[in-house]
Image 1: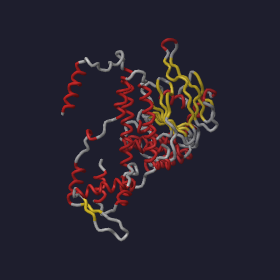
Image 2: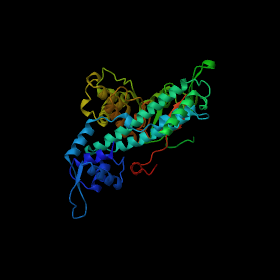
Image 3: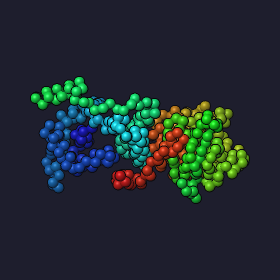
Image 4: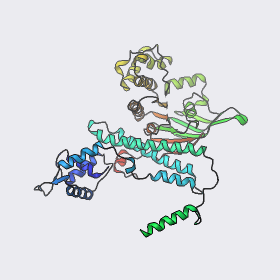
Length: 200
Length: 244
């Protein structure tokens, strides 16, 4: 999610100035996504540049509220209507780490899996405890955010369980393949490609 | 692990071997675990890692081949069959995936049954059963029979039966079974509340989301406890992120 759409959604409730936006953002995400005020103002100025919000006259206290424009409303509606693509998310460092652990000599992959499972499990306990304390109707937005994190952590533990089962069945076929030598065809291709890249 | 005066459940270097010789199956190999009042411990591990064996030993449903199991300081090995049965009825509550509700008894009668078997007068047993049904949110459904209740309601009755009276140790094996996620969560909420009121609990599960309700998660692999999660901070610490 972008902070941009978060701020637009908050301004759809009514005009707000920077500090109000920051407080409302943190409130609606249960402080799971802390923002600094600099991020809020940078984002507001980009939204203004793109015509999605407009500044209003300063208050007597020197605070400048912003309001959402029609173009901003259209942009926000499109965001709500469009599913988040998985390819937009950053690559999963954990998956890469495990893949490398499997092919790196001297690494006990099961220990790597267990250390991660224990840490993720603890995070899940923390999230559950936070959730346990939220029973008021007005806590629902926060509970939804917490639930999302709970289910993600659960999915990670399930995936780690799956990895462990695969590891038990895995019969290593000998040492991992050596690093490509310069006379390998692939390496030649890579060198050629790199050369072409350098010429561009 | 040293002994603990206030432990509700204590496993000391417990072994459980099935069979003998080369065909022997070592279900548990030297497991030690202490569960104190107000503490819920989740046990996780792959199929065949010894989770259910651990629970059966903790509840006196099975006997270890080595080591010792104590409930409220009482070594289970020192009890005869009758003493063990009495302890199980009075002090230990079981919640299984199979609910084992008796179809010919009403919800209230199902919950009161373990107390009546233990010699509690019918009237007192019913009063305690009604209190337990109220605790699980079903005070109005006491006269319904199991087949007149939804799956979630039946599970609540089974939980009321496990919590009725003064059970100090609650043992749960995949207690949410096939319930949908909201109903399953309500079941864990009930369990958590009883633990917070001073009971001790062991929850065997392969669902990480359910284990998340525990104060501590231990991991079993091939009959050995291989790992445990670090203790949690207070909610205030969690909110401020200061325990990280």
